[in-house]
Length: 429
Image (cartoon, rainbow, N blue to C red):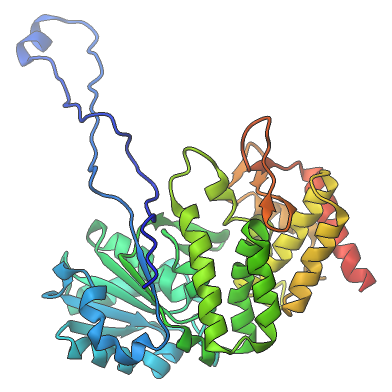
């Protein structure tokens, strides 16, 4: 078992002692006609830590009855639980996992999401289905079938299913148990290995959501062999992101074995390395913003490009990892313009993603003004400027020593110049 014991993120309260509210006596309010002091209070549930255990085991789903009760919280064992999946993943693993959970003695119902635009790859519930409308349908369906506060939502699928189920679990009864069984490279390397749960909005990606932990995340590398090459590489893009920002050795391993990327030993090793590098970034952000900026590398530009490709007709529609690959290339251009890295680092970015058969250029029919406009919806867009993490070399992020932070505010002129440089490379290629 690979356990990320340090998945202790957002402490929403500080460590000061609980203070009871103090209110004036009723008779004082009547007799003393003066302006009342504000009533103050401090409260918190200090035992509510966000923690997640990650299990990476090849073939675990084929023998899941022996793990199911240890994966689901004990409180859920006597309640009705829900296995939530989409049509394609259901055809591959739905009945297998459902029957294994029931064989373990668990009360489980299956809910198949209404995703119309599915493909054969396993990442079947596309971004266009990650909406409040689909979430509302899921809530209605589960409430109709019956639920209690000890019920557990078990997501079975890729990143979209994981995100929807995470937000669903955080919303029902203001929070019920959550387990992810993630079946795609994107889920096992990124979407499920996080506290961030969200749906998309017509104005931008992941604009509506919550921070909510799964108690367990189950990654079975055997499920990755059913993915198309495109969807495998889509998830590998996030693995490469952690290598570029944290480990040259990890990058070398990924690229050296990418020609044999359907080898389950290779896939399991890449998933394990990615989880080991991502888990520490999910701790508290108070001491350093590295933990916030590192996972977001390439995401400001990437999210804007991805959203435009899906929702505003600037196709072809890009998968998340494809858009993030473009975002990382543009981020390298930004670092070079700001004299934070050599041109060789920029060239290396393009070389890496071209070797991984991932897109590297902003689509030709996507105007740069529109990309800039969509950037304003990025959660790190502050005071009219996006804040980004940048790299100085492969495996190293830039630290602004003057302000002791990794997040750098980027001027619009620099952003535009970097995107123009990216487009010029496309024209030369």
